[in-house]
Length: 221
View 1 (cartoon, rainbow, N blue to C red):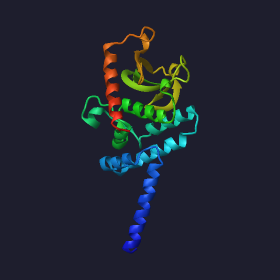
View 2 (cartoon, rainbow, N blue to C red):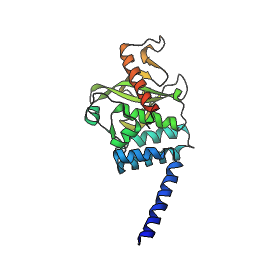
View 3 (cartoon, rainbow, N blue to C red):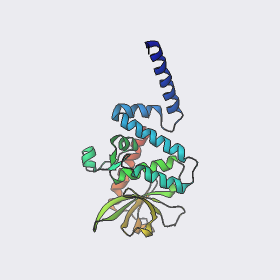
View 4 (cartoon, rainbow, N blue to C red):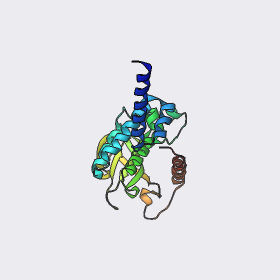
């Protein structure tokens, strides 16, 4: 192939890529930043997320819940890792850009990724809640986070868990004990929801979530 033909091929490919990115959910700037920060593997995961959102845009909410849960629970997309090993910090709330780029995250990162993706798909934030629980792992009760979906106010929620692709109602999850539930708008202790009281522990998670929202304002995915 001579140089002129080669240049034309590259030019056409570049134009196609820009057109593809501009017509997608994820901005072309995000693709470029992913490429420079995490390389080709990160870009490929962004493309898969983009396709997921496109494919699910016309589906009902039940399908969206199942497919989003399956997508992020796939170890080729995201696998569990401790924040200390991934970020060198005891506790770090990563955004989807960081989680996909690294290819790993802890339970909070799985919940954040699913939560934001479902919001992108039009699921109301009033239906989605972060829920801290104690989860039974091999007979030991360990702190864990899941995403709760309330089809209607007052319903028993469905649980999206990084440990299983099966979505069940909370009353079918005997391995979980709810402790704290919140979303972007409010924060309350599950057992004290009627009184509206907040604990010192609640204040910590309020700050974590507020700090995370500030990162989103700066253009993070």
